[in-house]
Length: 375
Image: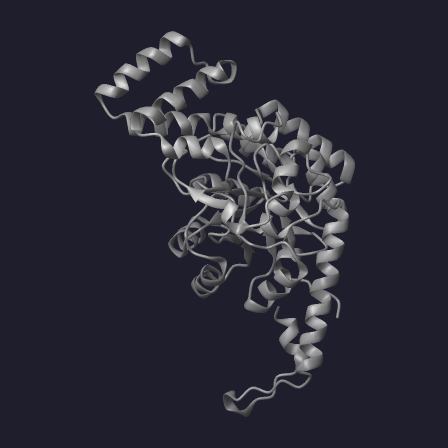
């Protein structure tokens, strides 16, 4: 059978219900262009771009694809959040995505401009709150997902959110194949979102040295959660930098945080004098809390060290567990074509195995065709 359309494809205007998530330093204009041309829907990572870079990236995607059927991701706490809001509206982008999201008034601005709001959540209560604020659809990220992540796996979180909201739900966390897409659709989701799988493509801007580290992961235990970076659950590839953070006590972690900031002082504004002053002040107060604040501020730089500069052992490498199941770097077009073909095969097998599914409820007969139409 042909992969059915869903409310996600209808609303976002993409051919397939496959979403490329916004990954800092990874989801650039070229990755979004490749995803869009292949029939998926891509989000630019506005959180790691300044306002000028965001606008240039938007223009580049529009020029290459001839449309604005793509999205922009941002966080309200970032310095250029208001510019991201204005740019998404000015260029009539199809959607915006966010975690810590805009308030009701800002969401109303998006809705008035026809920009869809697609927040990412890791808990049912956050999905309900997002809908109350005006979200048009929800992306749920299970604990298998990369970066900051919750503890509830996709298989549990998805049905919980489906029961709690009526808007379209996109499943993320652990997806990389057509089997995953077929299973998500069968469970009631109307699309899947992938970050790690799109990052591990030939269209990704990630340096070869770092990609080789991702491809080299063969065990899910190598993709683990740590709270050592900023005190929050953060899933990433295991490496020496993470070990060093976890082995250090509060004062040692504070020293590492300050040295990291000083090492990249051009980006962070840290000076040697400020570092020493902060160190001794924190020792008197709470070195653990201060180190978390500094590391949280340093986080974009630590990711940049691995994902842009190509030094995977000197920074952090956010990753979903699915990296352990990926051993190739196809183009976005090859990836999406393979996912769609496999999903269609899975659905064909399902319907051929149960050609005349009958429901015991009220003795009604439900054909496989009508069941499929609800996917």
